[in-house]
Length: 143
Image (cartoon, rainbow, N blue to C red; front, side, top):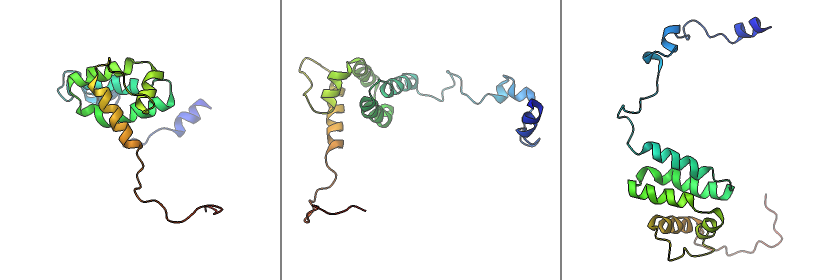
């Protein structure tokens, strides 16, 4: 049965790579080396922060922080990345209250990026429609 399975998934000869190109040789390796110059010096840190912002353990926080980080981390300076790392280290309950606007960020927290993040999230929560409906929806069926 094993032989029949391997024969069923075998690639045509035109698609198969020679064994020497796959078995650890430089020609078969498509990943850039760390010193290749293809990546910014801060990219490793950005990837770590992005991962941690999406894996906090609270779905709401994963969505808020992860979405913001996906959109903005590439543009942050080294100092701002340090500030974002500080934000990631904050406790979920407090951070959630600040990010959702339930509470203001305390004055004793000196993190300008946290205030920027809160303001941008608040703006994203704002209603997108500026006109109110003129008709009533009472008793109407949505189809």
